[in-house]
Length: 117
Length: 115
Image 1 (tube, rainbow over the protein chains, first blue to last red):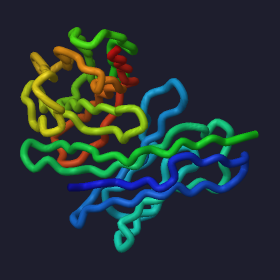
Image 2: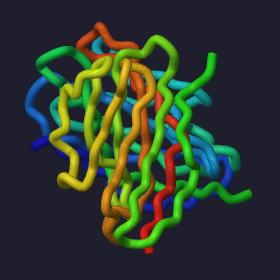
Image 3: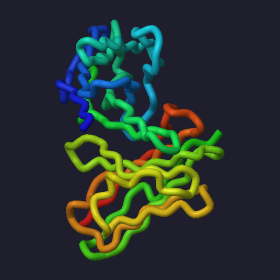
Image 4: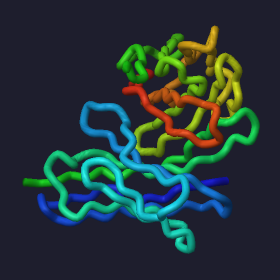
């Protein structure tokens, strides 16, 4: 079965520090990868996604992620975090449903990021 | 454009009672998904509708859970009778469909507490 690992459960950073959140998945086939973010009191929002093409993906709010197929990784990065980046971050991998289209997501356990002023 | 909405936002019930959660997807989205997050754990897939048909319900925990999507619009998820371990946040998501892979848009979730 497919699984997703997020190694950092809680991360605390000062403003302007650089961020890298790890995400590894276990699936040998073609994958589509996502990072979602949940800000306090808000719903899950898509931060960025990788379907194909350039393995370096840029998302909203200055976030980017790099797909490294040989390492089964899709780490999220931001050069300089802001207090407003305080949120929970989820890595997810699609699992294709072969009949009828669509996909279901397998999520990691999430990383709670706190950015201090 | 309105996003995915869910009702109620919170529900507190006693063990043995019945609760029905509702999800309204983005208009025109054929795919509708239910997920659940138990405290401290990952968000887990429950089931997937394509229009009114259940495409995959492999994640449903047991037969106390019943999901419907009459007419292919909104969906309900009923838990009857509720047990303590059913507590968690239930998320609904929708996607356009027609593609092998597309982006899912999530609702705010319903926080269910079973006492």
